[in-house]
Image (cartoon, rainbow, N blue to C red; front, side):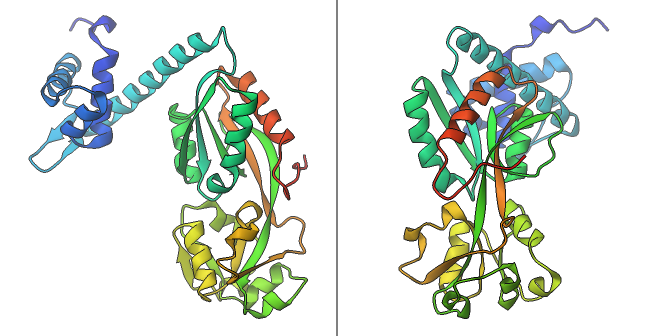
Length: 310
């Protein structure tokens, strides 16, 4: 068999196939790509013919990648990410700190930290356009490694194979309890007071859950009973009197007391908190830009957080 010529492949065809894999629907994929469904379907069939591999199982109910198609589509997604980076790098080479920056941020940080980041970015880097994505740590790191994000704002520690982390700040935790709870009448509280519970936790997949568990002993965990799908739901559960928890400092501002139904107390342990970092791929060609952005973030820290220790 003659070797397949690379010129037979089209980035556009790969983009269409990846869109189908993402949407699991030819109509939605065509809409996202700005073409007709008939044109997209024809180009995907052409790509399958060139490769000699069926990429999708098509039924009247669903569209799913084949086993071999899964591997090829992951490779196609990586190729498209490389092509996008090449274009962006070329565009930015003559004008650093410009163009798009695809930034991911964990859900327990984004709503409370990003407003200051956006304001700082517009002032210091006016030619830089932020494109934001909020998700869990694992999903953000997966997108970063695939090249779908340029950098992520997450809490350490995380596996950093092939990644670079610039520590930005240490964010203390606050104990949060209903305003009529016994702890609300105490001025000094500590992690041991979490044992008075019931302890409320975030659901699996949220790094705040793991960070909270790392601070607790077995007595505390025996009292836990309920889980929240988001930080705001956790706050509502506390206000409803279901239990107590820890809340990151930036999310424990005065206006988040739910009309006085929640009391926040400073924890006595200095280590009770998390370190926030800006993370990117070690192969990122914009590393100098990202280091400059990280340095700018450290200069404009929100009130209450502090520079991380080495």
